[in-house]
Amino acid sequence: MIKRQENNSLVFYYNLLIVILQYNNKGMGLTKTEKFTDAQNNIAQIAKVLGHPARIAILEHLIKINSCICGDLVDEIGLAQPTISQHLKELKNIGIIQGNIEGTSVCYCINQEKWSDITTLFASFLNQNTDNTANCC
Image (cartoon, rainbow, N blue to C red; front, side):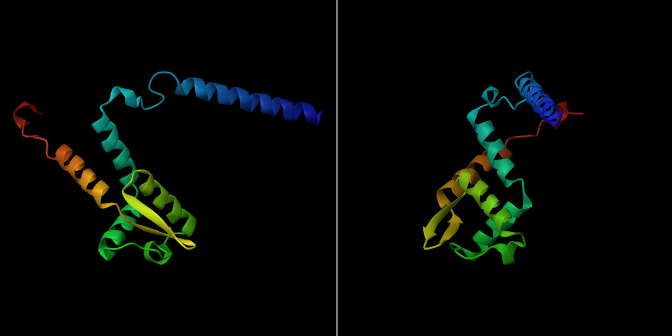
């Protein structure tokens, strides 16, 4: 009897997974990034990564110290090491920070070239003319 219940549970979860996957492949279940320009996707991806205050705090700290940090950010940011590592990984994935392995630690700093690219990208986006208030509600 127990074996049959286990099999029924597995079948139920398998079927549930199938339904979820089918739902995500219909309509707007996913973001459909191919419908947008490379610039729009790039801005959205960067904004998503920058959308967490811990990542902003990490970047502000790196900018403030104006050098690479090889030590622990736990005391500075106030989060657990695994959490900080995950945030560093996300920042590194978009290239806004770079890391070098030195001995048993990883040193991180701002990637100046990427920082400049992101600054230009966001400035271009945010400086668009919005003075069409005559046709606005």
